[in-house]
Image (cartoon, rainbow, N blue to C red; front, side, top):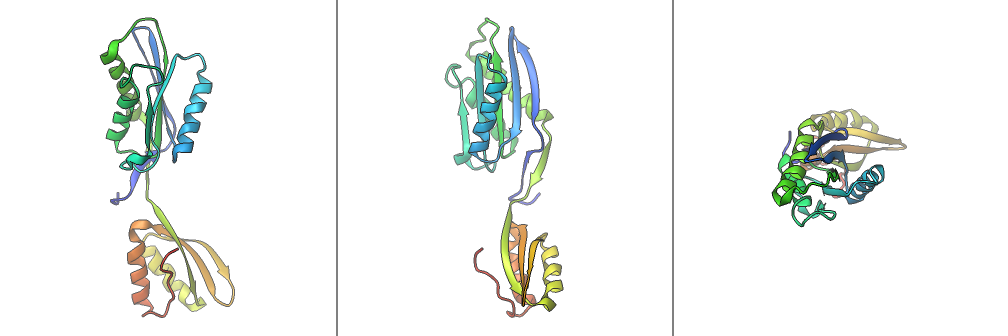
Length: 205
């Protein structure tokens, strides 16, 4: 896995546990962006309208981007639910995910420590069964070229793990390319060297 690649959830995972008659249902889903995370939280609320608490946390971007984190105790004592859930998500190294722990109260108090263990433990157990895939951040750019340059461009592009998204045919070709962000700068340098400066490359795209 390249340095800027990171795992994301492949599908939604769910586990359930009963602790002192309280039923805890934990769901974790792929939620790129805060809006998707909030939409998932609301969907879980609607699916479990009779639950006493819907506690949650999310990492809506890359695993290390703390500006994309959020959490809520949803009525549980401060620090006993949202933060333990977020701590487990942070420790997983997975990005673009949201965990919601639904609690149906059984009438027996768990205490502060018990709640932390229940919410954190449920999240940890669900992370253990969560299937992930690797996301490699991509960059896109457009290149204008002559027809006879196409094969060489495709060859260099393949060497850097890129692909052609679209091609516009005219007097010249306009190629819409996608390739891993980490290789973008080297790809441009490789093209410039290969064509000895005879190919016009965009500075930014």
